[in-house]
Image 1 (tube, one colour):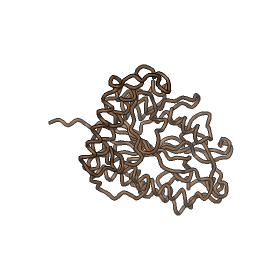
Image 2: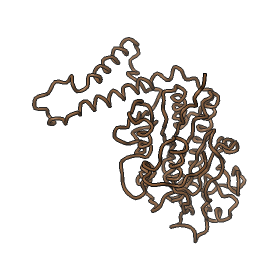
Image 3: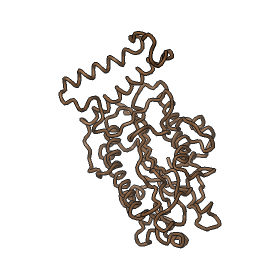
Image 4: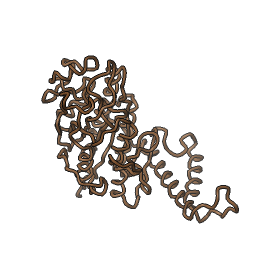
Amino acid sequence: MTQHPAPPVLIVLHLLGGNDALNTLVPYGNPLYYDSRPVVRIAEEQVLPIDNGLGFHPSMAALKPLYDRGQMAIIMGIGYPNRNYSHFRSTDIWETAEPSDIVDNGWLAKALREIDPRAENVLTAINFGNGLPRALSLSGVPVASVAKLDSYGLFPDIGDAARRQSAINVIARMYECGESSHPRVANPPFGELPAGVLQHAAEVGLAAFRGAHILGSTKASYHPMVQYPRSPIGDKLKSIAQVKLANVGTRIYYTSHGSFDLHANQIPNHAARWLEVSEAVAAFFADLRRNAASSDVILFIWSEFGRRVRDNGGGTDHGAGGLAFIIGDRVKGGLYGECPSLRESDLIEGNLDYHIDFRKVYSSLLERWLGVDAMPILGASFEQIAFI
């Protein structure tokens, strides 16, 4: 029997708050780094060297083997034109792929519309976190948003199985009835509802109901092959592994971790954040690999901006050019782009300049990995990067 390759899966991890690129991929071979960072710096003997006078923060030891095996691409000097130092606006720019105009629709949601145009699978995309990120927002594109998978499902507080099934049946019938079964109410308190509103509400409710039912049942078949770290990002990546291994057809997962907005007391807090991320990501890929389920997965890690070159005596303030990571078995690992100059004359308002527009990475992920046309999603053509 011929086995068809599993469809590619993209996992997106947002490092909330603006990760300090200089203390993540440390230019320990450049004396200007130490001149600019009298306090908030990583000593050369602590750096985990990789290449070209650059090395990882010491808390990233769990991730280094992925780089050493050629399974991690590092995008240096990533950013966008007309930089913005607001967390909210910069995050919107990354999530909508629109640096100039304020728009509502997310780049990943547009990709989902191409992947599943009829919205046949209510779990084609899942956000692990509270609310719905703008990246996954688009009318007609269903996305499940899960705060905590262990307690997610239908009536988890009803212990008796028969009573729980009875309640599930009632809700299912209510949603499936749709608009046609609702009698018209005379003088409704909020006015007459537009045609189709109840039907749309029923469809949305039924989609959420079905998604909750499927996700609630994934735990029974999941047997992690590694010990995940006990941290919020460890829990989220473990949940993603649980759903991935259940084969429910999810193509895009989204989650976040932070905050990396470290204006003060940065040295210990930045170390703690990267230790959490590194150990969780390493455990996640080890779990998938031992379950023979890692070959169709790519993890994309980004942050809305970097930090200023000079420290402020205890932390770093909002900057511009940053870093992104692409990790997976089929990634062509290594350093991509140009390490931004630290010379004062090359800085922009005291910040690292960017050299790679983030939409080049998006275009590469969309076409080379997800197999969808990037042009209508990004609104223009962008040179792609051969990390896949």
